[in-house]
Image 1 (spheres, helix red, strand yellow):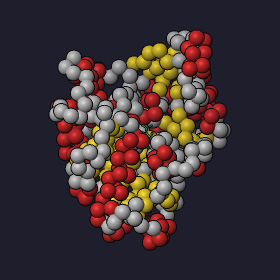
Image 2 (cartoon, helix red, strand yellow):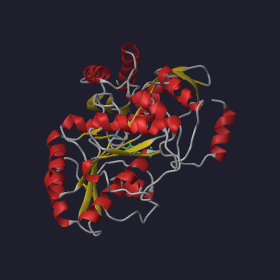
Image 3 (tube, helix red, strand yellow):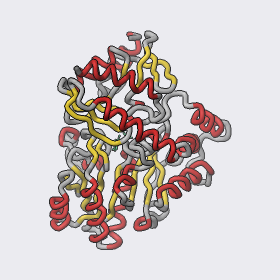
Length: 389
Ligand SMILES: *Cc1c(COP(=O)(O)O)cnc(C)c1O
């Protein structure tokens, strides 16, 4: 540990993060290097961000090309990268329009605004309730904290934005009752809950939510900040369920390491925003969007099939091994419930050259770069198994 950096960090960086005692100084693909020259296989990818790993040549090329043209113009003028990225997203999903921001929380804020604007215009402004799920995670702003169904994040910040109700995941009857008892504008779910425990919602539930929203004219929203952009073996996780949401928010992996949020608006809500109703100084930044397009273009069916294959391999490799209770998730979004505590397992893995994440509910969470090699993946899983045994 370069002591100086640790000292500077604890003296000057707001005390919101408890960091591992590792300083990263370099990386290449799925490998990170610390200040002592020790290598790690990265099964976290910056929390599902670096989906093509570090120093991804195609992304660097796209970013550098745009960097040498212009870096930022504001949204007062037209520019190509955001328009082309939006076109790509809409063509691939069937959604109609995109609002760009800079983070997952902002992407969800926009989704919530879209749902409330739609309901206010259609049914009246008292129809403002947004239903989200227990164990969800939607961000850190006061409104997305209200959306987040985990009380531990709420403490110290009350009052949060009003108008949020939390439902039990996979309980369709309970959700129907909430819809009967509240004036609901929108329902926001993660098809695969990430931070809250790496839990894929059931097929019947997600289909049921989509049908309920259709029937009651409620805005159906999926938060694909973590499970989107190829992570689960589909471009967006809702595709596993054969549904098309009215609103899809995403961020994390979309930018390949630069900050971006995107809120995709389907037919039902594509015109809820008019000039002045939302905005972001940096939203649609040309450098970020040029990089994002280079990422998305490579997430074709062949590549996504590889994500599925690797995800299945991970599950089969870990299932039933000593110290492993169960394995959850979809594609390369994987939760591992270990007999030992998740923190102990992750610390041991780090000692032995593998970085992994944790999630709520005592889970070790794996979000490797989607292009991780089979050899690195297997090597990392062997380290996990040794740590968990
Ligand atoms: C990380 C995450 C967010 C918040 O994204 P930020 O970019 O940190 O604001 C929202 N929703 C989900 C599902 C996430 O995983």
